Figure (cartoon, helix red, strand yellow):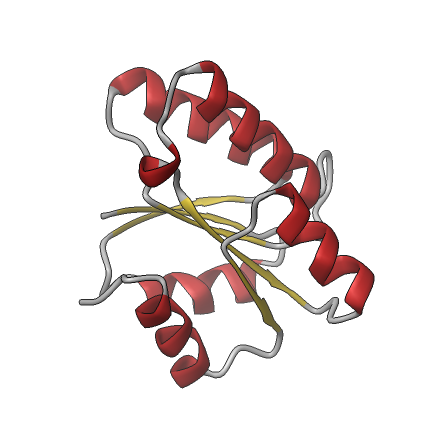
Length: 131
């Protein structure tokens, strides 16, 4: 599985990469624009990401903007709903507005920081992702 982690904090990116490495190949983008570019390039190469972990508060483009652009890219490229990337928002923002906004834009799951490994793994299991 290919996993894109969009996280601007290097320590958080390293932590999430460590958790996700058991699931597949991880690529880290340090801002929202890099995340969209990496996602588009992966689609162009025919090697799409199956899972994205998106921080909401990132420079250049927020996680919500990234999510919106990624879903639009998938739609324009004819990606079927069943084949869309699973998107887990991973953020310190746990307010109802942020959570509901993410789901409305197409997020698959939402986890607040600090991330407990067992919570992340359980979330992935509910999405049908296992090691």
